[in-house]
Amino acid sequence: MASPAQPTTNPPPPHPAGGPGRNHGMRIIAILLPLLLCPVLMATPSAFTPTAPGTMEIKTLPAGTLLKSAAPGDYFDQSGRLFGPLFRYISKNDIRMTVPVEAEVNGAAMYFWVAPDEVPKVEGSAGGVTVVQVPARLVASGGGRGGYTRKNFEAAQERLRAWLAEQKEVEAAGPAYAVYWNGPITPWFLRQYEVHLPVRLRNPGA
Image (cartoon, rainbow, N blue to C red; front, side):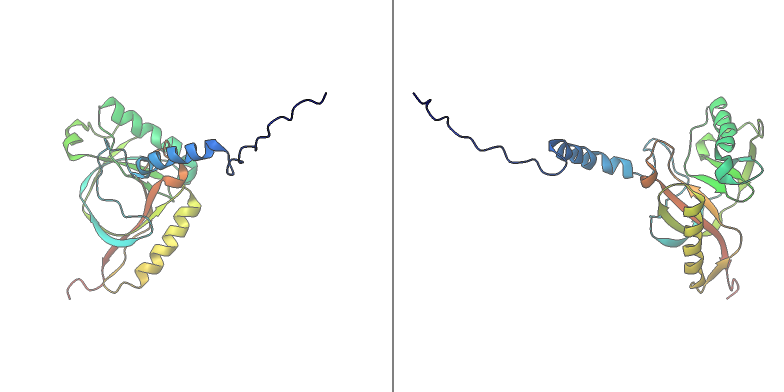
């Protein structure tokens, strides 16, 4: 005797490419992305306002107290060596970290800003760190996003110099340097940076 026919069922529809976990992952990214895009940690004071990625501007940096660590060679080869003395200095003197970090690329040097209310904790030059008093500076600033590499620095500098050449009121007055807003915990593709060129008025008496 033949067995009764078994009911047929349609197979479930295939998951979209990437499977069900893909949508879950995208939701997590959507939640975290606004936090990661924040240029600085909310608890970290800023010495001045960042230049938005992809924009160029002329701005005045405030006068301030900076801590300098220097070493022979190239900044991108020496950045770890430069960071150590500065971190030990602010840790020893209980000085709060301030952003951004400034970097002299040729003739490697790294600078930490000291927030005005933290200046009384500065105990003078020591341990490979030099205390520097910097006057207010007028700079051309080009903002960018990406890895802190020589390639990105050179490309951003080239764009900034081309833009500056079109400005009628100011001209370059010194070498370019890098400005870095994020620490190593930030993914490379979300890191914010600037290239600065010191500038002066073309006709200051006009």
